[in-house]
Image 1: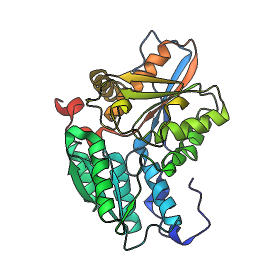
Image 2: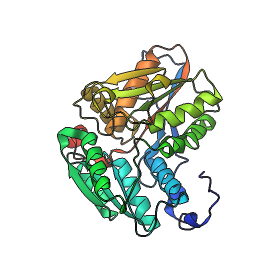
Image 3: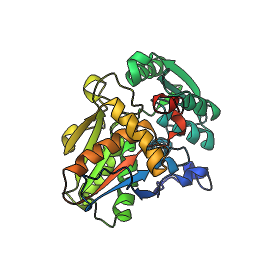
Image 4: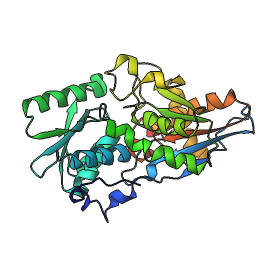
Amino acid sequence: MWVLGQHDEPYKKLRNSLLNLVGNTPLVRLRKVIPPDVSDKVEIYAKLESFNPGGSVKDRPALSMFLDAMEKGLITKDKVVIDATSGNTGIALAMAGASLGIRVELAMPSNVSEERKRIIKAYGARVYFTDPLEGTDGAILFVREKVSKEPDKYVYLDQYNNPANWKAHFYSTGIEIWHQVGGRITHFVAGIGTGGTIMGTGRRLKIYNPDVQIIGVQPAYPFHGIEGLKHIESSIKPGIFDETFLDRTIFVETEPAYEMTKRLARDEGILAGQSCGAALFAAIRVARELEEGVIVVIFPDGGEKYLTTAPYRDL
């Protein structure tokens, strides 16, 4: 899936490693969670990104950003890769760093799920916890200050502004989806965090068919409980995200996202993260408006990282 650059040396450690398993995730049609008022001629498919080796869609941009920085000669044995994260990108970077022998440091809000904190530490990355009330914006500002003080020490991948983020999906996710549904896709639905997934996948799908509708999903409010999603208007806007590219944005409240997350486990056997529930809630809203169509929705990760959080806490 990944196209090697002109300089072969950085990729020797990539071959025959688990990083080769990134991408080519399964697509599953959802049936039991689809309400009866949705037309039988509307199909909804979930792209299960939890099947990536690091457990989330963020494996794709993490590997892409790593390889891009390596090819440019930015990453050396003396450098430390650093970035801000809400969790999944941090896990993916920590995993890639462990596999490639590169030191990784991360900043993340202290209220992210305990599971994600421990997974990152298990990979050997150093973690700085920031004010939970500031969300990922606080983590971004922390990293920017740290890099400004020690610019020679760090390679700041900056997932929110790095084109290698969305290009990962342009060269993988979008192509996979198109072929998995035989080119029949009419609507693509994805949550917005950095914006990389929806921008890269959406751009690829629009090349295949300009009529494919690209639909973004955001939390309804600035203060929400849907880990991994970003309320763009109240946050530091990711440089790689362009809302004018989207055909539509759907805002989802926290409780419906949680309820849909729990239903996925009970009714479909899919243990999913909170942002999956939010994306599916939006996809069903779109489905109700159609007489026929093929909707593909991204499920960014699995529920194993959220068992101590609200959707699963009372089980």
